[in-house]
Image (cartoon, rainbow, N blue to C red; front, side, top):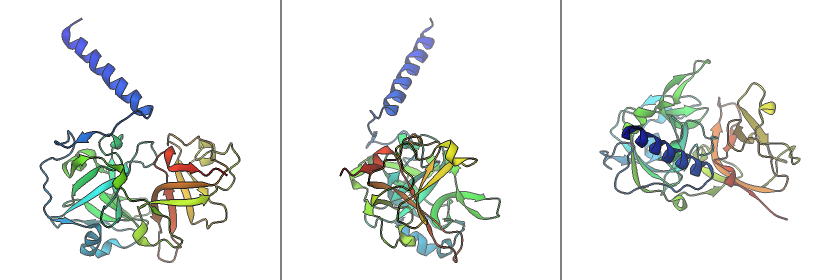
Length: 288
């Protein structure tokens, strides 16, 4: 066998071992302290603003659907709070600021984003040229998309474009991602945050009902599960492609953590809050 073929086989074997380790949960966050082999290492931390300042610069973002190109030379310094590690946060990552806890969704057309952007990874994001706005009231950053209803909003940017606008900073530290309790009366400022809802049970959970079976989804690719004794404006929203989609829902009380997305298509419609579970470890059963 030629040397180059032997090398190819060895590289394939290493890749498969790495993939299997990730699938089994035996995976360590990469250390990018000396510069990442991903993104734009040339970015500097000049003109860093907060998410609140970004909103103040472009107040027209605050609409059910909005899409504004960012023209100011500005950057965000944020930390990843959610990713696609188990396939439920699709083509996007959730980010939060360490100091303020303010959050946003970054829309990226790409799979396995978790490999370079694990929870706790700090990012420097060059905003200039990207688009900022809302999808159903949820603040997002990406590139323009117009849906069938004629609403234009930031959606999935090309993966190569994203890599030009992001710099990986240091080593991931999940302990630095703030998790707060889901408030009794959530506000727009809570949209996209990592929050925990406590002492809840799911309507219809009987030990066999799953989070998102394809049978329950029908023609859709996601399933809404509701909480016993709570408004139907608060729900768990799960993709049928999530790794845990067919896992039975516990019948006992739970504390569930996840990224909470706001969905409010008009001012006269009550806001809906969708809990996006990042992975199965976000679900903590409370033993009696």
